[in-house]
Length: 375
Image (cartoon, rainbow, N blue to C red; front, side):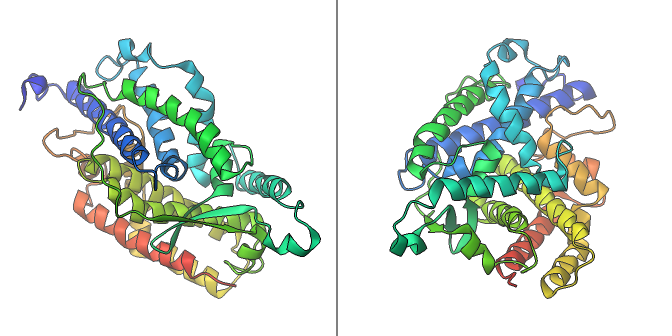
C-alpha cells in the first residue's frame, strides 16, 4: 500500500471515497488524453469530439456532482469552486440524452417526436437549393464509418448536443470548439481530484484509425434499412444505437492503453443503454412480427443479454456512471484495478472477466444484427 493509502484499510468510508476519487480522476485524464492525442492528428481530430462527446459529457456531469458532494471523503470544495457554471446547460441536457430511452424526463414517444423534428430541420436546412437537374445530389445526413462499420451520424449527434444544422466545417469550427474548450477546463479540475499535480498527457496513437465521412439523403438511405413499416424517426433512433455500439466496439479500444478502467466503464454504459433502447423498441413493436423483429427478440432473449440487463448488470452500470459510493455494503478493493472489485461486489454471480466477456459477445452480436437488418 502506498503512503497515500495509509489508514484506509480499516476505514470502509475512506476506502469507498478513495476509489470514488480514483475512478473520477482516471476518467477525466482519459478524456483529456483522448482529446489531446486526437487533436494533434488532423485526420481524426475533428471526429472524436462528435463521436465520443457523450462519454465526455457523462464524466463532466457526474464528476461535477462528485466534487461538489458534501461527503468529505468524496467532495473537494476547493475544486468545486473552480468549476465554471456555464458548462451546466449543455452538459446536463446532453447527459440525459446519453441515456437514450432510459431518460426519465422523456418518454419513448417524446424521443421519437424530437427525432422527427430534428430530421425535418436538417432536411429543410440542406435541401431545396439545388437546380432542378441536380436535386438528386442533395444530402442532409452525414455518416461516419470506421472499418466499414457505422460509428455515428450527424442527425443523432446534433440531437444529442442541441447543435443547429450547419455544414460540418462550421459545426467543427464553432460548436465543437466551444464545447471542447468547456470540457477541457472541467476535466483539468476533475483530473486533480486525487491531488495528482501532473499535467494532462497525450499518449495515444491513432495512426491506425481511419474514419470516413459519407453524405446521404436521409429518406433514401433509411428506405433500405431496418423494417419497412418503421417511421423514419425510429430508424434514426436505431441509427444512433448502431453508431454507439460500433464506437464502443471499434473506437474505444483504440484509447485503452493506460486507460483500462475508463474504457471498461464507457463500454458498460454504452451497451447497457443500447440494449435497453432495443428492449423499449421491441416492446413498442410487440404487435408486429417480422424477420428483423424476431432476430431482435432472439438477441434480447440471449442469456448473456439478460445478464447484462439484469439487476446485477444494472448495478454494474450504476457503478460505471456515478462516482460516489454511498452503499455501505459495497467494499471495493484498491488493489484490484481497473474496477477495484466493484463488479464482484455488486454482482457476485459474475467476475470482472466474465462480465467483460459477456459485453464483447453481445456487442458484436447486436452490431452485426443492426448492420444486416433490412426490410
